[in-house]
Image 1: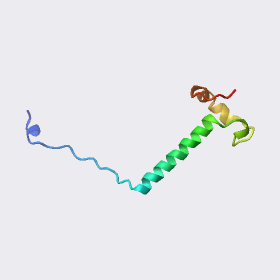
Image 2: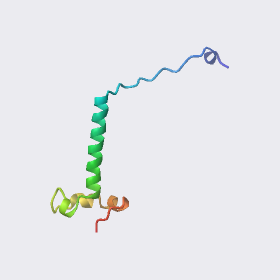
Image 3: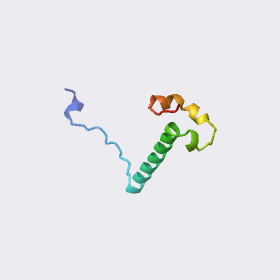
Image 4: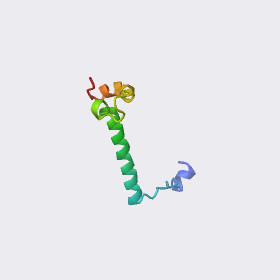
Length: 74
């Protein structure tokens, strides 16, 4: 054994950020909103429920992802 192992030196402690309830709620809310937007654009933005009307650019942009995730679009 080396001398440094025998002295019982400890690794430096990691700083843990202080997450208050308000900041945790804000992070959770933003995560849910972003996930909801991603779900909408990947799964439901077509036809009558499209935010952009008859424009299909978003639909075509995520077209292969829609099929991969199991959303029908034809």
